[in-house]
Image 1 (cartoon, chains in turn yellow, cyan):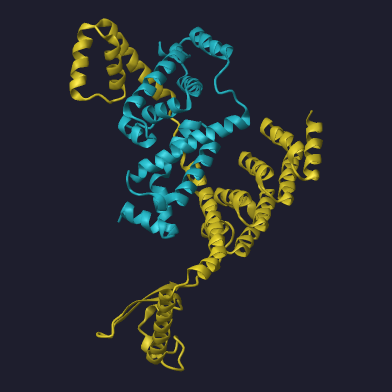
Image 2 (image 1 turned 180 degrees about the vertical axis):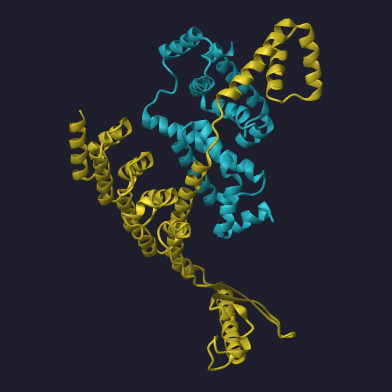
Length: 318
Length: 190
């Protein structure tokens, strides 16, 4: 009797991979073979053991952190792509211009001017949008919404119907203190998603030393993400400095180590090593991971100051 | 209303960041879970998660819908896990296989201690650690396939599509991995 074949079937049944006919075959064999029946029981125990011993599922918190970091990394990726595109666009234009493209562009330009002209006539020559009585029932315009990126979708000469698409942007003013959840969410969003680095920088500056105690973990994660991945060194530095106001913990340690190991800006690496030194002064001893990083930095960092600092710390530790 | 996946993919290719975010959020828990179970370290899992979606972002335009998007995504995840582990092992200089003594000690300790004590939590924690150690002794492919089958509940056919390996070979890897795991966890099996 070929027991190996049945053992395979037993294993497959434990994995829920047996079809009905094989299952039937196995059942028949188990009823007459004690050896395989014993193996079948062991297989069941083994399966139970695997289930009760390993249940690592990612927590919501971990998923949230991963998403925040991914957003920042994607923004960096998009800005890289835009820079590349901007670089190659003139070259592409130079080599790739064809008369059809030129004609198409001219037609679009003409259509744009024509629409602008008609819109001007329709909405009143001297009137601004707010004064135009024709637009009084146009709620969007009345409520002070800014219109950008207008495009013509349809311009039918026969019916005279014109269709547009546009972005309607409304400015919203929000005030509140740092313990206001909405304010915190906006700051987090701005640190991670705002395109303008100046705005990202200002958003970080809004978190005062006193406010640190009031903010939730999302802002801390956003600062850690910005310190590690923001493409602008000014923003990375501001985020790194702001993290010094937070109580030192494992994720802040990881941020310092990440910057120390990966940031191309030596000023930021110095800030990171200083952050570790400060944490040590506050009573957090250097663990193995920190010591390994410092060992690497003591020999391979291109900046002499960082090498010396790392050696000094290692000298004090040993 | 749930937007069609093809539409989300197309919008993402056209540069719609929100569409890409929606696409990510449909599958990202599973990606993180795969990475966490394979690497057993939250920071490493987050690194792989990020690498996977950056790769997806960059190469989505090359996705030809010849397989399910999820299959393509999990294949990228599996490859990213393999690469990450190789890189990390090189960096940390952790030996790929345990020394003979280590293995002997592990087996000896398990045989010696037998079933752990009555405290269930302690027992499960200890068991988790031992399972993790045993998983670490499998080859990268055995480990990935074993994890996908036993902890992610994937079908052999799905794993085959995902890793682009024949079903028969997947079964072979699974049998070998199960055999090794049984030996390494023999103290607990009884």
